[in-house]
Amino acid sequence: MEKYVIGMDIGTSGLKSIVVNQTGQVVDSYSISYQTQHPYTGYSEIDPNIWYEATLDSLKHLMTKYDSNLISGISFSGQMHGLVVVNRKGDVIRPAILWNDTRTSDEVENIKAQLGLEFLLEYTQNTVLEGFTLPKLMWLKTHEPSHFEDIYKFMLPKDYVIYKLTGHISTDPSDAAGTIMFNVKEESWSNAILEKLGIEPSICPEVIASHGKSGELTKEIMESIGIENAIHVYQGGADNACGALGAGITDDSMQLVSIGTSGVTLSIQNDKEYKNDGKVHYFNHCVPNQKYIMGVTLSAGYSLEWLKQLMSAEESFDEFLKDINQTKIGACGLIYTPYLLGERTPHNDADIRGSIVGLDAKTSLTDIKRAVLEGITFSLKDSIEIIKKEGKCISEIVSIGGGAKNKNWLQMQSDIFEAQVTTRTEEQGPAYGAAMLAAMGAQWFKDFDEISRAWIKYNDFVSYHNDDVNLYKDLYKIYKTVYFNTKQISKELVQFK
Image (tube, rainbow, N blue to C red):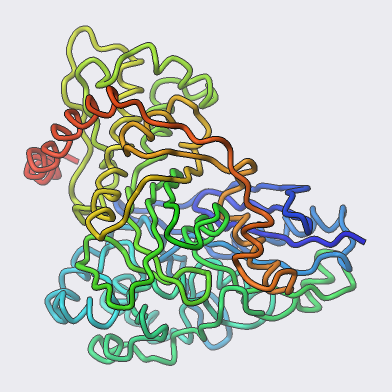
């Protein structure tokens, strides 16, 4: 009798669940949306029990359609860097602080001043940024000391849901790496960092493999979702790592470009001597014994969503983008920089803000749409250029997310990146990687190479056009100057917000 695994992705704005059979086919899916809260400028929070309730609702829905005896396991992908803190009773102390929260600028500067960049790079292989977990903890220590003192354990978003389902507190290396309290090379919590910053090591969760067993659904959960047979829960991984796994990125033969709310470029980097200079992230993969380098655009798909809400909120994205080829490369003289929420790679600047340069009386709405797509893609190229400097040959790219759903945007990616670009035949994002981790935990396959060969299939490559490549090279040179010419302006405009 056919068996299944469930992959669940706890995203910023919603939870997606998929049911996958033993041949890798997605046979069912279910999604739930929720809202984050922004009580003050730069704040982004949510009650983590909203994730838990969404998970329960999803499991209740799916378990009305599938015999629990046939579910071999559940695993999770989760948004990175978020901070969930619980007391000794296991109760949430305060709302979760999310990856796109930027309140911690002072804490970032204090950490850098106290530790120094070289120390951070030595003991975590990464620099520290506003979105990461460590400055969130330090913000609590400074601004909510009673909450900080009450912490029994901190967790990442997916880990809290797993704790509620199983009663077990743990995380995996790919999510632990994004806290900037974890030694990526040694795959353990960095006591050197914790000791210098006055963080008790005991509040860190146990670290197990991404396909390791976290536990089983508790009896209370089983009763709640209406099943009688326990289901194994596997730890899962960070959303970017799971997205890469679900796209077949398990070696350095292909690179990933993922365009969701944020944008990510990712390449496997297993060189034991690799030394990160802080311009990119260097994290553990959810595939055992693998590392990856990653660049991040904070407002990738978010830029497009922002524009659509301003211009035509009711339209689908397909309708909204159907006319972008009616304007030529360069959007009739426009350049957009996607710095709506600051920027990560390569600038690591929380204060910079976006711009549209070149507006004139002839500018059309279609020009602006194309400029936004080009600006997002140029920002991702910033990361690809850094990865290339590490000796990577970026000739084949797997595109997932929103950028994979529009053929004109795929062609734009191929031309700007000067690489062949392909897409998954059945692209389900990080939830698919989570399902693969559940399948590995359930021992359906002997190793990750075997499951990738069996489950991952690609569409034909989109190839770049040399003439268009040259035009985009010239435009990219101009794009790169905009940041430096607007950095000071962004700071001076803060007083008017």
